[in-house]
Image 1 (cartoon, helix red, strand yellow):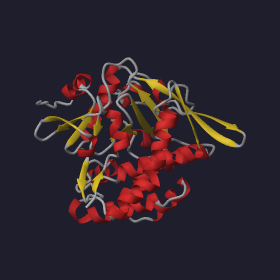
Image 2 (image 1 turned 180 degrees about the vertical axis):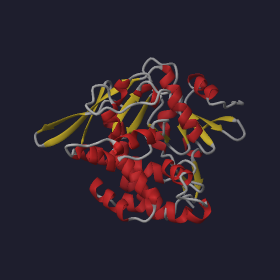
Image 3 (image 1 turned 90 degrees about the horizontal axis):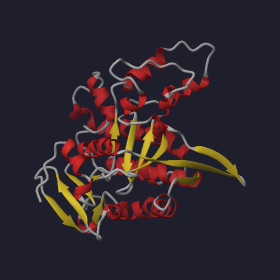
Image 4 (image 1 turned 45 degrees about the horizontal axis):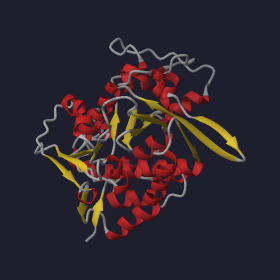
Length: 342
């Protein structure tokens, strides 16, 4: 029986110091120094064939893009269309590859349950989440994002629909710790989402906005929107990727579309947990020799922003959190209310 890693080792190595990772148990409060081979894994978590497919159909390809074009970058990251699909595909797989029994971490699920669409979680869980292994295989076998979106539209389960929709329709923002004394952590789910106090208000505001004359751009944004503002995926101790909802584009200062914020949320950045609106800048696009390229600025974050993202990641973890050095994540754990026992 294969020891399956639900966080790939090529990612975990980016959270090591002296080839070891610090492995925190949220339930026992214990902190251990471990090898990447023995963490974020479980024997038989995936069938052997699926384990091989994960390696051959996405992990190897993304490791090349990550190591050659993302981790080595200093101030900007440039990706072509194929790189972009590999990246998006890996993020969707990251969202799907941890089995979620109670759906508590799914933003769509929480809103649907709150609003009465899902009344008894146990009865609707199977229909909502679909088959765990089949969902992963469907995305692994997708040749492009258009196919993934078509599959998601025809699938009866909202889990696959919402993850594919969120990742493909969102745009990438790369953030780094910069001069901050805090590093990023890695939760056992591999990601976390954020749904702020204006998440539904912003969508409702657009839905109720008088659109005259008819504006296809706004209609397209409405169709792509979800309750999620963004999702964060740590890629190394110093680098993370934030998948930002396209709806944020019309909320930026200078946007011709006037969206009113509630009084308790005076600025976009504060609503989203960041210190600056610059973080939400979309990539620069250019065509060179027939190849479309996407260039991203890597945004350095101050310590409070890193701590905020880490608090989402720690809260999102089911049981375990990994990191390189405790002294460089201490503020994040303290803000999250987590006691660490050596």
